Length: 638
Image (tube, rainbow, N blue to C red; front, side, top):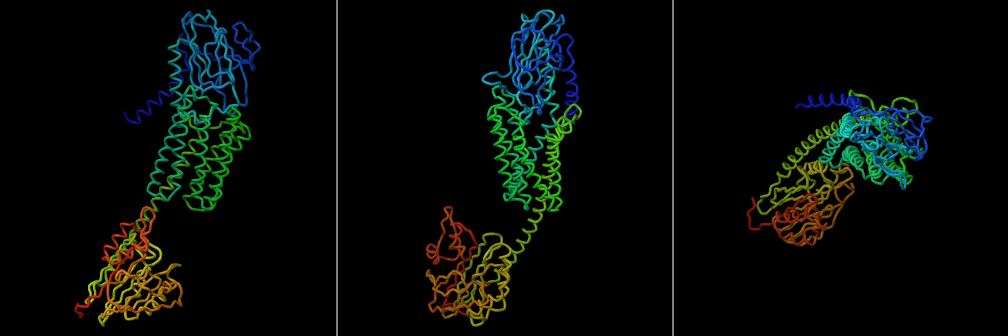
């Protein structure tokens, strides 16, 4: 069966059920529409012979409205003439949702009770009920029925406990055959569920929206707003679901801590919406974060007050606590409007519409004495304006976030393309280093921590058969560091004939004002064929000669001071010189332990690739560069 066919069938059935349920099934049931009511409490009022002619005429008792201020006992009485088909038979009385505690008497005898009277009147959440009436209790032809009822200051429509909608279809009590009354009560229950379908649909839309938000968070862990929105949407679905399960349990009392904990969780879910806005509204982020904490504390205070009073009240104190979050939500909406960005303005407008819907239901409809729009008719169903405006807010927000995510993906693709270009350029620049020169054995390994790195090296053969080596490290990472590396290597292209100290001074002047507050460490060495070396250092890790760290005078890193001065040191003994970047020394394992200078010193007698492999295995945190130069006195020099 297609979805359209199912929807049409369910709608027609829902439309027909109220009429089927309300129409008496010929002589099998009698609808008890007319009653007399009186405030107070006396068990003598259950007697069939009691004169209730002075009591006020009223319609059938129904569940109290959320704004009802009445509290206390009331009695209802009615007398009904039985048709011949019901006389002398076992019957039953079916009740629609009737909140709080009530007890039913037939001919002065109790036939059933919902809830308990002692130590205080208390009941589960209201539901459709059926009470059996034995034939021996029923005289012919008239039956006297009385209801003893207690109602507290009511907030019985706390929505987390009516997810199923079973309590949303009130009907008058009915007297008839047990099978008929049970069947009709099942019809009423199903009708209530179908009539409440739009509200449940809104909850499932919230769940779907929450799942989308959580998926977005899973691919962008830095965007906490996705997580907060997901928590709000999923929580808005789960809280009424759990509340509905509690409401269907006969052992869970309305005034117990179990419903209060669900309501406390609901306040936590609502506060997540304020935290979500704090991630979008940078202008008032601090205020909104404090507001979320304040609203959570106030919400839990209201829960405690309700539990301590053993009643769900509509006191001004609890009402004020419930309205405080609205102020912060509107502050967030104002902050988004001030941003004057299309997506932020759309979210702000949707949020204001949501708050207007809530305010109309909670305040203005009662003030003006008009419909609160909680039960707007939609064919055989009803729509709650609050659920609609909340879904609109979430949908608008999710659309804006998805569009922003798409734009971020486009920017990410463009950034990755730029990084790829920078990586290829860096590979070409470093690949231009000659590693096979007469008279020298050169090995070089470069392993960036990311796509592009900030380390660099350059080997430059000179006309007299000597070799100039420059090794350096740019502070920072990413494209900025890679571009600065390119600038340094470009500056080296035409300055190969300078002495090490002079070359470092030249590079220092070349990068002044271009480091963005960072710096560049560098070491420059001039290798001569006879086995001597002239070296100058600008804040870089000292190289090692045959496993021994060279003692050099360290100058300032490049780009720090235009007056920096660099000193040359001459080494006369030939051997293998190992240049390192700090990515080797600062490799860190899972325990947080650095590779350190002692272990690094032991590694420097090994080939360049083995040194780099050891640092990577230890735990690479930064770019790794290892370059070794060894004199080969027996090799011919061109």
